[in-house]
Image (cartoon, rainbow, N blue to C red):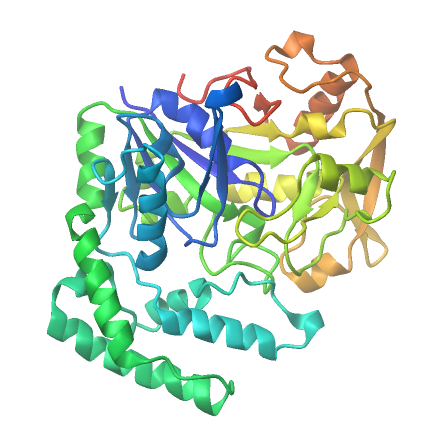
Amino acid sequence: MARNVVVVGTQWGDEGKGKIVDWLTDGAAGVVRFQGGHNAGHTLVVGYGAARREYKLNLVPSGIVRPDVQCYIGNGVVLDIWHLLKEIDALEEGGIAVQSRLKISPGCPLILPCHAAIDQAREARRDPGARIGTTGKGIGPAYEDKVARRGLRVYDLFDRKRFADKLAELLEHHNFMLTRYLDAKAVDYQETLERTLANGERIQPLVADVSAALHAAREAGQNLLFEGAQGALLDIDHGTYPFVTSSNCVAGQAAAGSGIGPGMLHYVLGITKAYCTRVGGGPFPSELDIATEGTPGHQMSKKGREFGTVTGRARRCGWFDAALLRRSAQINGLSGLCVTKLDVLDGLETLDICTGYRLDSRRIDLLPIGADEVARCEPIFETLPGWTEPTNGVKRWEELPPNARAYLARLETLCQTPIDIISTGPERAETIVRQHPFD
C-alpha cells in the first residue's frame, strides 16, 4: 500500500529540509513541492571526495538528483519561469535529467518583473527597524495578485491574446503604484509580454495536471514525498506575523497546494535544528550574540555556516526553543522529528534549552500567536551538560556521546514528539534512523 510523507520545517526555515527530502526520496517514486517560490533554498550534497557534488535548488523539488524519481511543482507554488529555466539549465549542464521528469501545474500563479519591482520598492521605503526581511523576489506581491483575483497563471501563457490583455490590466495597476507612490520606475509592458511568452513556450512541454498525476501514482501504489519550503513559524496564518512569508508553510497546505485530499497524507516529518536560527527581521526569544568569538552563538554561526542559501545573509542564531517547537508540532500535526546539525554543538561545555517564557509576570509554555506578543516574551532556560566527543558522521544512536543522547532525549520529552531521525552531517549516509517515515 502506498504511503505518503510530508516534510516541513518547524522553526523559521533553513532547518536542512533539502538533505532529508533527498535522503527520503530513496523510498519514493515522486516528490511534490506544494508552496512558496524561489525564495526557498535547499542545498544537497551528493557523493564523496572527487565525486562530491553540491546542488543548490530553489524551485525544482529536491528529489531531482535521484534518477528515475518524478518531480512535481504543485498549484500552491508561485512560479518565476525565468528563474525556473535558469535552474533547469544549470542542473542539466551538470548531468541531471530534469525536463523528462518534471511536471508543472497549469494552476501555478506567475511571478512577473512587476512583482519583484513592487517587493523591492516597498522594502526600501520602510524604516530599517520595520523591514520584513523579504528576499525581494516578488513572492509576496504574486500571492497578493492571486488572492485579489487579478493574477496570471501558467495556463494563461498559452493564449497570447488572453495573456496580453490580462498583463496590460495588471501592469496598469502595478505601474501606477510604482511610479505614483513608491517613486520607482515603471515596468515595460512589451518587453514583459514577449519575454514571458517566449519562456512560456519552453516550459509548455512540462505543464501537466499535477493533481491527476498524483492520484494516478496513488492508484499505482507509489510512495510520494511532499516537500515544503520555509518553516512553519513563517506561515502567513500561524507564524510570527507580520514577519512571515506570504504562503501557508504548514503540513496541511500539502493537500491544497498539490490538489489531493488530506486523507492521502500519512506521516508528517518535522525538521528542526539542534539549535535555532532566523533570517531577517522578527522576534527571536532565544537569540544569542553571534559576533563575539568564543561564545555559543558565534560557534553556531561559524561552525554551522549559517548564511542564507538564497540571500547570503548571516542567520541569527540561538538556543533550541522547545516552546516554539510545541506550537509547530500542534499546527503541523507532527508524526515525528528529524534533528539536524547536532555536530555544531560539539565542544560546548553546557547547553541551554528554552522551555517556556515569562510574559506579563506569568509563565507560558507555548509560543504566542503574532510577533508583538512573542517580542515581549522573556525566555526561561534549562541547562544541560555538553559533550566533547565528535558527533559528525555518526550513523548509529548507540555511538553518540551519552550527553548528546541525553540532550536529544530531553528535546523529545519537551517537544512531546518522537525524534525519529538525526542528521549528523550534510551527506546522505550521515543519518541515524530510529523510525523510518515510510515504514
